[in-house]
Length: 147
Image 1 (cartoon, rainbow, N blue to C red):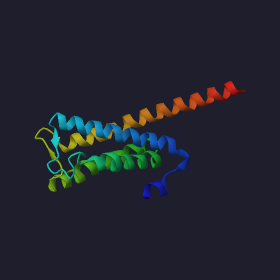
Image 2: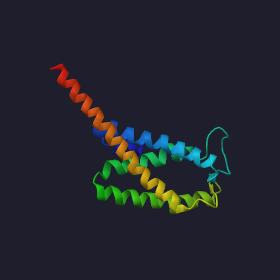
Image 3: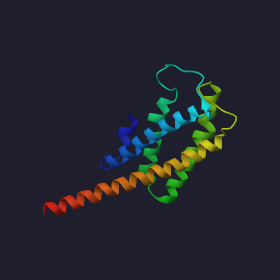
Image 4: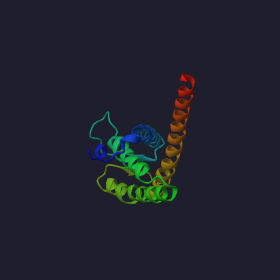
């Protein structure tokens, strides 16, 4: 697996947390979008698995775990996130539409996807950092109590 080859194992906990949050939120938002009629998936390979389930649990999380790892500074994270969100919104999404794997409603525009992905990357990063800071704080408290 390519991800395992390039992941910084010293940051594995925080990267896994970031990726899992991406998975959970992607799946949740995908279900909400379907329920609200913002998009649909005309071609279902398996009735029990949403068609973009693989993208929600692999492509988005792995992409953003790499960005989180390799672009830690604010400016580089911004550029990488904007670039990848643009790629997903204006290239990958239209390809899925052309293969009839994804059909947005008349109300959903590509730039909405860009905005959602862009802000999600920052929200998930903020949550991940807050969680990591809490873990670090708890470990320090634990070490102090042991002394």
